[in-house]
Each structure stands twice: as C-alpha cells, then as structure tokens.
Image 1: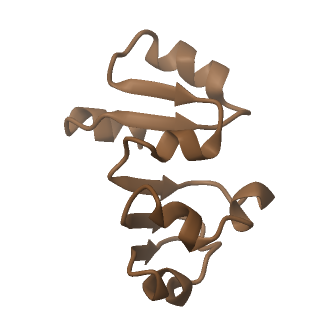
Image 2: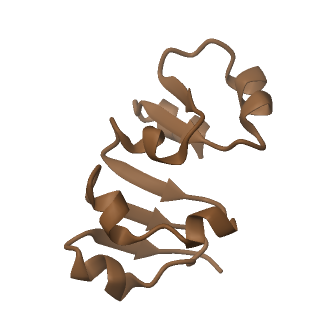
Length: 97
C-alpha cells in the first residue's frame, strides 16, 4: 500500500512499532515517508488515515481523537463502527474482514 501511494505522489506518515525497522530497510531514506513513534503524531500532517491492523490499541481510539487531525478514515480491518464516525462528521470507509 505504501509503495502504491508513493507512486501516486503521496507523502506518508506511518506508525507501526512492530514493523518500523523493516519498513525503514525497505524504503531506505525516502523523504516522502515519515516514521512516527506515537500513533497520533502520524496524523498531524495527514489528510487521511488508513488503518491496516486490528491491534487493541487502535480499537480503543475514539472518533473524537481522530477528528482533531483529519476527516477521512479508511479502516481495512473494520474494527470501528461507521455510525460512530458519521456522528463526528468524518468520512469513514470500512473495507475487508
């Protein structure tokens, strides 16, 4: 997903404490990728959030916390409820399992 977004001209802020070291090796010194060490810091410059994991720490995140940073959420694991995000006037798309 990151590679495809880069090909389309996107800048990426990503947070993944488990895979960050491997991602750094794969993408080397790419100025279009910022690796973040706190989940909300990855949202500070973002226009959209693409969630690609169903970790417990993300399940606990509330739409109000995300709304502070952006308006578009793509949840590839369907861990959140669309109605919760709509109540906060966020654009939410649930994909996948």
